[in-house]
Length: 319
Image (cartoon, rainbow, N blue to C red; front, top):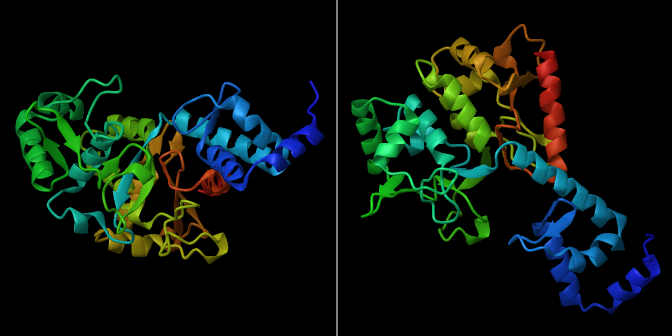
C-alpha cells in the first residue's frame, strides 16, 4: 500500500511542539523488533510512531540503524554496563585485587540482575555464595579468599537471605538515567555478556590473569571508536590520541612490552581477535596503536558502531 505523504505532513503540522518532542523521544529510546516499534518499556507503539517514521527519510533511516544496533547487541547476548574512572588504572581503584581477581570480577559482572543488581542466572534464579563458587570454578579455599576480597572492597554484598548483589558503581544493568547513584565521576561502557563468558570459559585456568587485560584497558577505550587512547571522550576520529603499546604496557604495570604483546596476540573470541593493531609496519608492535573488538565492549551509539567495526576489521587483516 502506498504511503500518503501529504496526509502525513498535514497530521504532523497539526501536532503541538510537546507532541512532536514526545515522538522524537520515543524514536530515540525505542527499538524495532519483528517489524514492530517498541518504546523503552517494551510496549508496542507501532501505530503512534508510524507518523514520525514516515515524516522524513532521515528519521526512517535512523530507526533502521538503531534496529541494526539492537540486533548487534542481541547477538552478543545483551550487555552489562561496566563503570570505571576514566584514564585511571583498575588496580588503582581496587588495589587488593590481583589480575586473576579482575578477570573473574568481569565474568561475575555479566550475571548482574536488571535494575536491582542481584546476581542471578539468566533465568532469574538468584545466586548465593555456594552457587557463585561453582559458577567461577574455583576451589573452596581459593574462592573464600577471593570472595572476602570482593566483600572488603564493597564490590559484592550479601543480604539476610543469602542473596548476592553487585555494587552498581562497578557493574549495572538497566537504564542509566534510572541508576539511582551519583556516578558523575565515573564513565561506563557496555560489556557484552556472551563474549565475556566465553572468554572466561576459554581462559579460566593458568591463563586466567591474561583475560584481565580486557578489563584493565576499559578506562582508556575511546567511547566511539574503541581505540585505546589518551582522550576516550573525543568524538572526532582524527583527533584521537592513541596510546602506543609500549606506553600502555607501562601504564598497566608490565615490566616488558613483549609480555603485553604476547597476551594481546593470544586472546581470541569465536575465531576473532579481541585486540587489533594499527598505525605501524608491525616491525615494532610497541609503537603500534591498539583497538578493541566491538563485540567485546562498546560504549558508542549506532552511528559510530560501523566505523569502529570497520577499523577493527582492517586491523585484523593487517595484523
